[in-house]
Amino acid sequence: MITLQTRLPNVGTTIFTVMSALAVEKNAVNLGQGFPDFDCDPRLVEAVTRAMQQGKNQYPPMPGVPALRDAVAAKIATLYNGCYSAATEITITAGATQAILTIILAVVHPGDEVIVLEPCYDSYVPNIELAGGVPVRVPLTPGTFRPDFARIAAALTSRTRAIIVNSPHNPSGTVWTAAEMRQLEALLAATNVLLISDEVYEHMVFDGLKHQSAAMFAGLAERAFVVSSFGKTYHVTGWKVGYVAAPAALTHEFRKVHQFNVFTVNTPVQYGLAEYMAHPDAYLDLQDFYQQKRDFFRDGLKGSKFKLLPCEGTYFQCVDTSAINDLNEADFCKWLTAEIGVAAIPLSAFYGAGFDQQVVRFCFAKKTSTLQLALDKLQRL
Image (cartoon, rainbow, N blue to C red):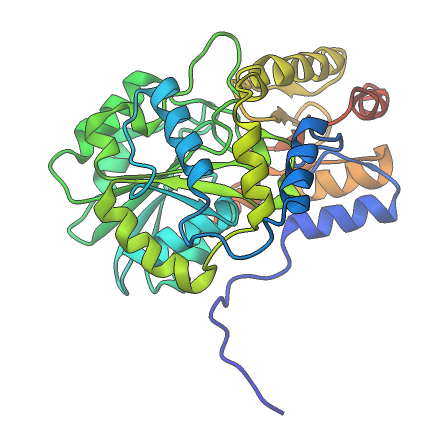
């Protein structure tokens, strides 16, 4: 038999796959994986359909359809006062996950170190390892999930190539403040460290807070790849379309890799998105849309034994389960799915060493009827 030496020896079946399969087996309400169970705006589907009917079905330019890149550059300028050339500094990608992998493959060389702040999205570390880089795990402050700049500073070395920051943060729902972004800006000022700024939940920020994009801070923008996701913003995660904004020199290196691992992205979807972006209400109203869902879900859990952690952004709610039983997070999620009928994700899955705080994550990007069905079950606790 042919045998292979694995490129990712530490990667097995993810907890997301395990919990989704268990949810199906137990006919449980799946609040584990982060995707909506409701439809997108019909205007968006109509715009994509028109593009298909108009024959826009062949390869677009490698960096993306010019009209869509123009729309992205205009949005960033309006919201964040960030000045990006649509021609040389905006690239349309096959989702944010592909964007992040492509960034890392473009800039990380074997032996380079990349700082990741835990808990973190599960693709970051495997991406770094595939590039031959060394992930350097720095924990966010347990309990609050705020950045610990003393620890970040201590992790910086002459081998540090990049740091990945995710705000609004998956899984905790924490949103970085302007003061924290300025502190990062000052910390990196004397270095050549690049910033990979994962901003896919940029339009889901609650209670009057504002998303602090890396594009807003000159000292960060000059070294940053800013990543966002049309899938998250427009409730079309299965379309897998996102974008990267970065200075021309960084974009030049990014596109060298992009042209070979993706080449380009679905043409009619790009044209449809470009047309749809003429309606800024679709993303400007998103924070109110999701805050209503967050508040509905939080209100429904108030009578339970779950301790609600703050949720400043994203569509995830973390809860402390220690008042319910003493199971670890993974076992609690399996018990909750099998016995109560609701699937969640253990926060320990977002840590390399499986750090257990008896905290689990629910996704509230669901129909009201779905959330109510889950709450009816969870309120028993």
